[in-house]
Amino acid sequence: MVIALVLLVLVVASVLFHLVTPWWTTPLASNWKQMDDTLTITLAITGLFFVVINLFVAYTVWRFRHRAGQRAAYEPENKRLERWLIGVTTLGIAGLLAPGLVVYADYVHPPADARLLEIVGQQWQWRFRLAGASGKLGGSDARFVSGSNPLGLDPADAAGQDNVIVLGNEVHLPIGHPVKVLLRSHDVLHDFFVPQFRARMNIVPGQVSSFWFTPTQPGRFESMCAQLCGVGHPDMRGYVVVEDDAAFQAWLKQQPTFAATQAAAAPAAAGTGTPAALGRSLAQTKGCVACHTVDGSPGVGPTWKGLFGKTETMVDGSTALVDEAYLKDFIRNPKARAVKGFAQVMPQIELTDEELAALVAYIRSNGKPS
Ligand code: CUA
Image (cartoon, rainbow, N blue to C red):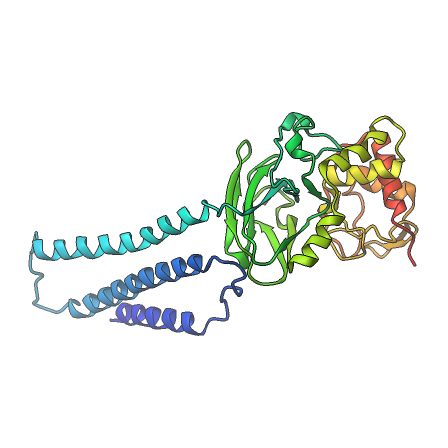
């Protein structure tokens, strides 16, 4: 009797919780209403089965409770009941699977006019590349990856020269235009996910996965990594800014093409570039920019804007002047000190002495505190 009541309370409480829960999904900001519909169908079917099965068990626990002198009836087979159960279960399972088949087929077949966006996952940051005027993305290969070519684009591929390389972890997209997303990984399994777009896809090392979507709402949406990919996984965040076409075109013009990044890197490769320029390129390739901004906005680690010359306070209350020696020590041994207000999550990064000096020069170039 008690068990039957517990089951009854469980069912009523679950349904009530579903109705009054504050945990709803974020407002939809893409064309993928079908994703929400599929989830709703799944919830309706599993919810209905949950309610019916639990109420049935509660009823049988109460109806066939132990009573003195009463014996259970033996019924080895009930063909009619079996047919009903098989039929209802089949309908339920088909209802769960069929919408997914249809929606997934749509999800991986982009419209012909979709703009190409490449997203490359790397522990623990996002990189973006957009097709240029030709509308094509050039080929890439791991063997081309270098400090000045972090995406590993084929320098000999004409189709890649006008590709737009996005510096930093924020990409812009025009509202209302379909985008075909191509995903590559630099190292391990990642997953690009923007909850508002209802769009996500695993990024498997060694292959290019893809999906498409059309952003339908303006705004700045946070993208996250949805596969556990190492200690920096929770910090692997980026942004997708959806704006009108004019603002998008203006932003696009500020981003360098692949050819421009190669031309700019040539003096550095020849040893004639400034250390700060090499440091800037290192900050990109070594992934520093995932946690350290240069515009003063907050990140996982301290912003580099105005960092040099500042006095930092440690967790133990002591203070230290941020100078060349402090930065070099800190980068070489990130776990030796704990700066107040920041988690001790900085990984140790392999750098030559020359690279370390260049990186510090770049941090220094971001200015003294005002
Ligand atoms: Cu990348 Cu988690």
